Every structure is written in structure tokens, then in C-alpha cells.
Length: 342
Image (cartoon, rainbow, N blue to C red):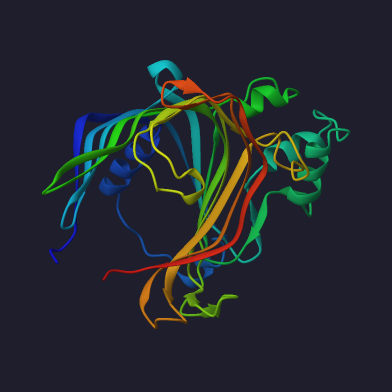
């Protein structure tokens, strides 16, 4: 079997502006300054420094992303932007290396901060949940350990501090993919085409936990590193569409020529809406691991969770719609995967 390769062709360069000019000026100034060693008495006065904030706006386009093994999978015409092909902007990324027991921004901590200041009413159960979960000893966020790298994505401007709608709709996005196809000696097959997703990005957190050389054992027996990457995000899809051109990708949809229009992914119905502010929720942890079944070392994807309501008002098989399809309290839980080559 040939060695798999992954190739990406950029249609145009990513356009991003970062508010790091003060950092660059400071760095150039420091390079010209005289370095002076600090003695122990001076070092004892150094208690720590604030983290880094990056303000980001961007548009991304990739003409083709290809994974080649014996055959190839091509993802064609990838586009990421703001809605209606505008700039993806109003994003603020904060990066901190935590001290032991330090509380840093995480999830809906900004909502908890506003609720505590009286700007948002705790009569809203989501607001009350945020205040209960993210207020910690007068600070707002989550507690971390020494050496944890914490990246929190939010908005530069959330609008009216008393408006939840402004908060939840501060960062809009649009993701488009022309097609996903497989190619081999027998030709090519299009699996999906004309994929379009529009919506909003809620609080998103990426944490690299400093677990040193420690390990832990999952419920399925897999042993994983205590140093892991943790991803947690909230989002909403307000309008989506795609053509499903090939079948057998997910067993519950075992047919081809499916078209979906007006797709919405949220969390406004059912019994698990508390704390999600109507947004879909996803989390996963990534680390090195060893399978308890095969003994193989690989990438462990564990503690996976996904919660959402899914609406497909136009669900077509062939040219005709079969009506409205809805999922309420769609949940993926207790999911662990071990990924390795063969």
C-alpha cells in the first residue's frame, strides 16, 4: 500500500489582520535595548504577566484538499468567510498560560459577568445556569492548572451588554464546499456537492492541558495521556443546504440522491437546552493513547459529546421533497475513538 499523502491547493492567500503592532514595536525596541540580569531580590517581585489578545478578521479559500492512498479523496472549493461572502471578523482570541488554580475566561463566562453586574436577568434559565457555573470566587470562567495553555475565542464587540441576541450573533460565518469526491482507477464519484452552511459562532475554547507524563484509563480500557488538547464550542446553523450524491455513508440514511435545503442546527427544543442559549454544543479531547483491544498506539479522540436539535424543512429524494424532517435532543455521548495507520 502506498504511503497516504495530504495535499492542499490555496485558491488565494488567507487575508488576516491581527492587532499585534504594539507587540512588534515592543519586540523591536527590546532587541535594541541593553539586557540586564535580575538578581534574586528583583525576581521575587515578578508575579506574572497578562496573556495575549489577538483581534482577527479573515477570508479563507482552498481550491482543493486531497488525501491520497491507493485512491484519492478530494474536497473541492472550500470557502470560509462571513455570511454572504463578507469578511469573517469581530473575533477576539485570548491566549493565557495558567497559574495553579487560576480562573480564566471560558464558555459563557461573559454572560455570568454581565448577570452578576445586573445587566442580564437570572429569570432566564440559561443566564442563571451561566452564573452558577462560571462565577468562581469573584472571578468568571473555569479553573486551570499550572502550565495549561488556554485559548478562548469570543467577540471584540458584543453590542448592547443587556442584549443576549447581540451576544449570540456577534460572530457570523459562512462555510461553502463545492464538492467532495473520491477518485481511483475506475473513475470518480461525487459524494456531496453544493454544501453551504451559514450561522453564528458562540464561545469556543481550546485548551492544552499540562498533564506532564501522567496517563489515565478511559471507561473502555484505553490508556491516554494526561496531557491533552480539549475543544469545546457552541454554534448555530441558521441556513444550510447540500446534495448527498452517494449513499451508505451513514447507515440511517442508506440512500442516494438526497437534497437538503433550509437546514438549521440549534438547541431550542427538548429537555437538554439549559446552559446552551439555543446553540448546538460540541466537545472532544485529543491525546496520544493505547488501545485496550488491539494494543495499537495512536490518536485518541475521547469524551466526545454533541447535542443539538436539527431541522430539515426541505428533504428531497431525487427531485421530490418528502416533507419536513426534525431531530429533537439529538445527542452523541460516551464516544471514544482510537485512530492509527494500517
